[in-house]
Length: 119
Image (tube, rainbow, N blue to C red; front, side, top):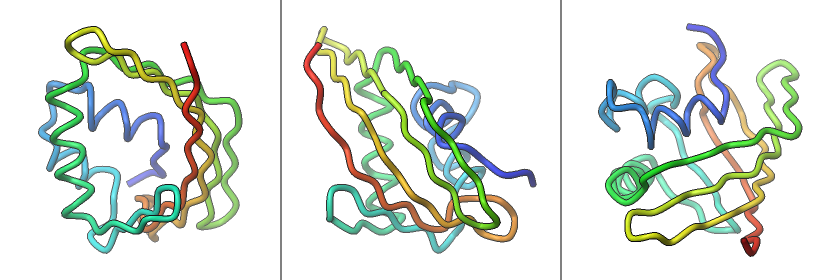
């Protein structure tokens, strides 16, 4: 398997009707995956529950990648994500993340900080 990217992972998780959330997670995330967002660690099962909720709530997602760097098993990236929710709410966040990749190129661990922006 080739290395994944945050953009492709998010698009598969939230917006790819050809994949279930479980299939998208298996494609992009190692079985030992865990994530820290703004200081809070979550395990893979909690991550999946959050992605299931997002998938059912999001009408459209747009991701703009500003910076992306891979060095060995280290991955760093900065992007802007716009989520258009069913019901008309729009969320815009700038995301800074650092990750560790498994040997097969999937995300093993992600540490990210998000900054909510006004639209």
